[in-house]
Image 1 (cartoon, rainbow, N blue to C red):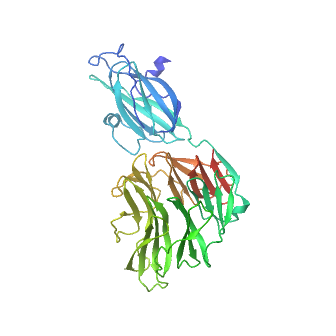
Image 2: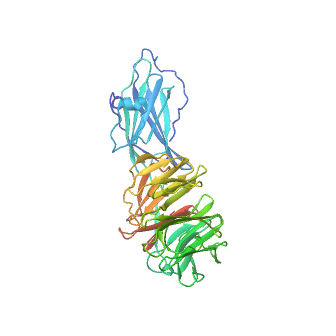
Image 3: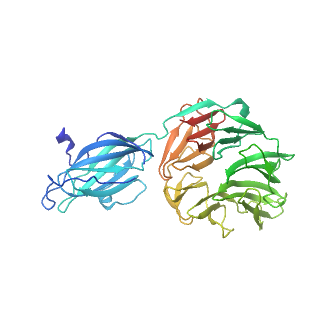
Length: 453
């Protein structure tokens, strides 16, 4: 068996690992190792062990060498082409690499740890060692299967008190989940047991359109049936009592199609698309309004656009002390925001210090300043009409309106894993919204609620 493992080409072994990128060398004695100057360095496989950490599973991989020197490794999914020896030695960065690194060989057995890999994937690790006199043959460790961080989902029927049809939104408001329907607010600590409040506090002729949470307040957006005007109601006691705030658009008349209603950084933001004063012959207007307390609003407007060509916010996020806004055109600027033309959804990952963008074409981009963006791959699919991209302290989730039981999960926003909620009874169940809080994620579909355990 030892002779089988001591290859001059590719060596494959099987191992199971989990999520999360670092490399570490294990200290040891150089006793028994050959002299670098006159020893042709060779590698053979060693041991593999799993280590459970707070953020998931990691893996310690070891190999044996007959000489001191330096090792180099690259990790790729099993469906990707193998890297060249030159690329491994030069540590050439490419989107095909999920991890890479180097270290020193100081003992007969050398170990290093790989973290930061996407879960529910199969990998191959490629290792080459080099000393003063020679370079080893390639050592390949294949069939490395990562396990799912989200172990299981429990599915229940959507309570009948929700009513039929689509819900408006689901959010986590600091201590509980909140959902609104046509005439009800629904509250739950765990996504299983719900309480309800009738929406009977809106002005006549207004209906709920969206709900968000920030700065200790719930904000409910309501509009008239033709969306000519909007009002915002707020609650400071978790949704028990509601009051009407000031008009976010300073009573500017005109058809307003809301493109963003969100809490970003330390402020609420609402913006419109193609606002025209009830007629297509009137120049269109761009409106953006912000508020720190959800009650008093500051509105900035700019008119003179032709209908259909006015700029509008597509999404926004905050990180690295920067407010980043995706806007439809570059014809609008503001000192408060780093505006860039972009599409899709945006969030900020505190762990990596990067903004994450999922474009409408399902490409993944990252940026530290909102100005310069780097494409990291086209890894997400089965996302149609993406509705929600949310970041928790540990994870990032993405769902779309027509996901058919699929949900995307990422540890860092760059490597994504696809989960399918097998327990959903209908294979064509459309994901509507996802929210995370109180140690779990919940997804609400047209007929069910799925939650993690």
